[in-house]
Structures are given as C-alpha cells and as structure tokens.
Amino acid sequence: MNPANTSAAPTAPVDPSRQRAGFVGLGLMGAPMAANLVKAGWSVTGWNRSPSAVEDLVRLGGSAAAMVEDLRNEPVIIFMLPDLPYIEEAAAGLLDAWRSSPPEPGTLVVVMSSVSPVGVQAFGLAVGEASGGNAAVLDAPVSGGTQGAQQGTLAIMAGGSEEDFGRALPALQAMGTTVRRLGGLGAGSLAKACNQLVVGTTTAALAEAAGLAERSGMDVEALFDVLSGGLAASRVLEVVGPRLAAEDYAPTGPAKFMHKDLSFVLESARSVGAAVPMATAGTELYAHLVRQGLGDLDLAVVRQAIANLSTASRENAPETIKETAQ
Image 1 (tube, rainbow, N blue to C red):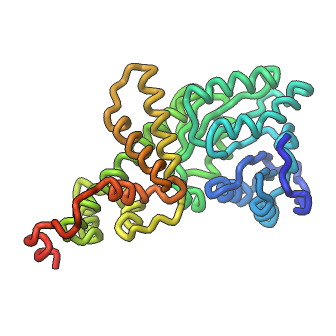
Image 2: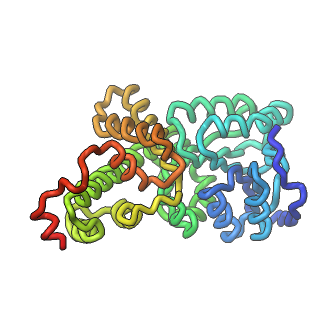
Image 3: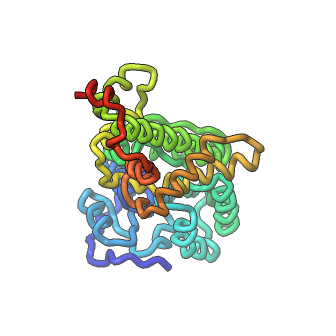
C-alpha cells in the first residue's frame, strides 16, 4: 500500500471523452510532465508521496489518487520516480490489485525514469504475470532536464513493442518533441544510458577545463564563449556551461543520479563485452563526488568535486597567463 497525504485535495471530475492517464512521481521532472499532459487535454490522476505536488496538479485540472493502486483502471500509468526499486515498491499494491482483478487488455505501464535496461525487462515480466498478460511495460526515459520538462521539449527514448509504442505515442508527444522507439523493452533505457555517458563525461570535461583555466589565471566565462564558437560547442556547454562558469550548483537534478546512470552503462557493457573506458572513468569520478557529500547538488558540482581532488595552489599559475588574462 502506498498512501499519500492527499485526502484534503479536491478532485476534478473525470470527463469520459478525454484520454486518461495515471502519473506516479511529481518531482522536479514529473510535475511539469504531468502538467503538460493536462494542458494537452488528458485527464491525469496523480500520486506523490508529498501532498503539495498533487495539490498543484489538481489546481491545474488533474485529479488526486490516495494510493497507487487507485490507478489500476487507468489505460496508461506513467512512473517518474528516482530508480527502479522505488517504482517496484510503489507498484506493489497495483500489481496485487491486478492479480485479484486483471486490468483491461492493452493497459500500459510507462517507465520514464532512468533505470537499468536489464532491470526494466524483469519488471516487464512481473507486470505481465501480475496482470494476466493484459498489461505491458514500455520504457521511455527522457533527456532535456527540468527546462525540457517544463517546455514540453524532452527527448524521449522508448523501448517496447511497436503496438505498445503506438498506444503511448500521444502521451509521449505531449511531453516531448523528439520521440523515438529504439527497439524492444530495455532499448529506451540503454539509449538513456548512452545519453548519460555523453552528458556526464562532457560535463566532467568542461568542469576539468574550467578548473585548469581558472587555476592558470584565465576567465572561465570567456573560455566557454570561445569554445561555443568552435568544434567544442555542444548542447551540454550551452545548458550546463553557465552554471559551471558561475559555480552555481543549485539543483536542477541531483548529481548523484549520474553515478547511477553511468553504472547502467557499465552493466550493459559487461553484458555485450563492450569496452567503455570513458564510462569507467566517469563512474569513478562521480563516485568521488557522492563520497564528498555533493550528490544532492546540481550536476555542475562536478567542478567542485574535481577541485577537491586538486592539490596545486592557484598561486602557482604561470605569470604570463595571468598577465594575458588581465
């Protein structure tokens, strides 16, 4: 059972003509994603451990679920929780309800969190067994951060059958602008792991460059401006670069999740015998970050994590570079 303190929140009446979805997890990413579904005309019933996020959804025109199992009759149930163990815990009552009374055929459970590709396949088997084969899982993790979630411009990487993807597509298109099916169940999570490999190591490289430049007497903002005009330009530099330069670590998404995501890269690489030296180094770096107690801050805090590993004083910067920077 997964009670939420939402009993005081009023619930909007359900219009049977509207497409319906349940939404579990209304955090920094989930709340704006659910809001975009409502704006697109969906009847959305949400559940969250803390009541305030559900109350916000209700104010937008959504409805509140007291427990996750109250969503058992929704044709689409979306999960946006930190990791698969959280999803499995939240869904336990739902699966028990389906064992007693199976859902309608074609029911979809959409996992939009970043999870293990292997783990989500096992979760798919559990959902299929509990529902008597009437429900299927589609993994559809996202990229684009809180800005993309708010603007409805997320990149969504899906894994599952073509039929399941087609049924989920209208909901996914309400939350993202780049929506692709990349293969069977687990393919979306593998694509997200690859995405995080690029984002995590690129952010770390930019942080490393920023630390080197600053210790050498160079202005980091000026450096990033020059990099943005050349081959080093990237969406990561555009979005994360300003936070790295300003050392602004207010969380838009906890940095500790990057360590988790890169561990999925290593897990997937081991299963196919792929060499992933950058992911290996990145996993070690983000493990240092977590051990330093920085995991709840923004991903840009990897700059501080690298600085904490540095020993050279900034006063050791070459005089010529200092003078040039002035």
